[in-house]
Amino acid sequence: MKPERPTVLVVDDDISTLTALRRLIAAAGFRVRTFSRPNDLLSSEIPGGDVCLVLDVNLPEMNGVRLHQLLSASRRELPAIMITGRNDSQTQCLLRESRAVAVLFKPFAANLLLEALANALSMQHQRSQ
Amino acid sequence: MAQGLLSVAAMRDRTENMPHHDVPEAAASNAMHGHEDDFQGDERDFENLIAEMVATFVRIRAEHIDAEIDQWLERVGRALDLDRANVGEYNRSTGIMRATHCWAREGIPPIPKGINTATVLPELTARALAEETVVFSSRDALPPALLQELDNSQLAKGVKSNVTMPLKVGGAIIGGVAFGSLRRERRWSRQTLRRLRLVAEVFGSALERKRDIEEIRRLSNELFDISNVSKMGELTASLAHELNQPLGAILNNAQAALSILNTEAPDIQEAREALKDIVRDDNRAADIINHVRVLLHKGEAQRCKLDPREILLALELIMKHDAVMKNISFRVEFAQPLPAISGHKTQLTQALINLVMNAFDAVLEKSEQPRLVLVTAAAREAGRLFIEVRDSGIGIDPRMVPQLFRAFFTTKAKGMGMGLAIVHSVVESHDGEIHVRPNPDGGTTFEIILPTIPHG
Image 1: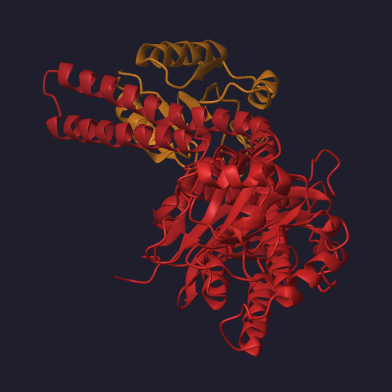
Image 2: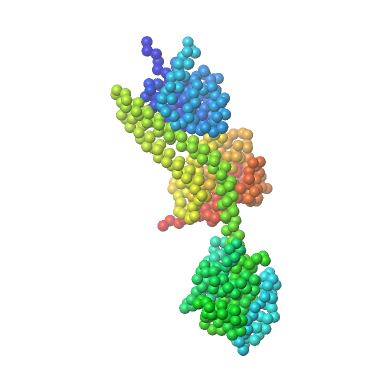
């Protein structure tokens, strides 16, 4: 039986980035759901099976690191890849607290994201077995 | 009997603060020797003219001072039936006095503006700088040095009677004024000299005011630059982030398009959408670069016609990320379209940035939510554009309001107190107004009103 395709949940308040990531991740064979605000993800249902998060760090309402923490506490532990366009001290502090499996600085090459996704999902797979 | 040269050194220091002080004995006796009235008209008319002049100079704005001096030189010159009237401004740092305001009757060669007066009339210039008033009704009694000086100069050759006076303010020489008659010899009554002295004082203080204001503008520009260096660092970092967004999206879209086209049955429509987005994001990146240019640009020398929306969109883009990072709800709202204004884009943008940064600080000092900063713009009245920066912050103590726009006044621990002083000077130089008021529901609103350019 063919396993379910993994789902990638993407949160970025920049609509253009969000659309581009949807295209890129979908073209790589994943299922994708995109959200422009953290609360939209928090209020929606997390699909079953293999799921990975791609979270922008600098978001309205709450930052991506906090969003990851909230999801982990309220739903289930999900691997997350943090993406950011900033490399300032504030962002670095945030990232130090983060339990993300990878951090990518925009602009990043597609293969970096796809490799990170593959790593994250295989780790999740190993853990759930 | 020809009137003699009157070197009124005795007037030094005595008349400066006493515009109505009688001219000294020498001048008085000189006038008494005259047997014809030197004044071609009604005394009362001239008195009224001088009164009007004084009233005008009390009222006018610094940028109109030069034009008014030009105009009043001519009116005084014509009222006294003179042929030339000139003002020279003395530059303390170069030690040179240059003719800056020159009137000459039709048919009389004018003194060229900008000329170094010492090159034409060294002796008279030196005497004016030595705070001496020099009056003569006829060349006959001139000492040889002065006579020769007049004869040597093509411009001064025809002068038959003349008065030169120093322009002195607060003990310092700032220039000189000269009234000359070329068509005929004339006498200078004590009354006339007293009035010319008053004219000189009014011109002197007006020119000093103009210099002060120019100096204040120069200094505030300098301070503006200094206080903006650190802010500009923050803002360019924020804009670099802003630039990473479209660059990242472009790269992702390009790679997505490649992946799509590499599949066996490519979704051409999706690939086309990706390419369209790439073009759009590229334009977005270019806009951001332009905004950085605006920020780093030192400011245009000339005012130009501006669409206020350009400024508001730049403001929104520049401050947006700071707001996200600080968890502040920041909106810029305006009705389309807005009437054009005349001004310096950089200065106005930076003034608004200052107000918005203050608003951010104000909402951050309040512990509870919501943190709102709203910028609105509307032409609520004909000819006036209202831009408001409204915050839900801690508010301003009404007792502080009168001092708010003063330089170095601050309520912030780390502030230099320059922000609002700069905003004020920018608004003022755009002939605008700035007001501050508390919001009924807490927080503060700053309101800038700028004159708009009439249609057509």
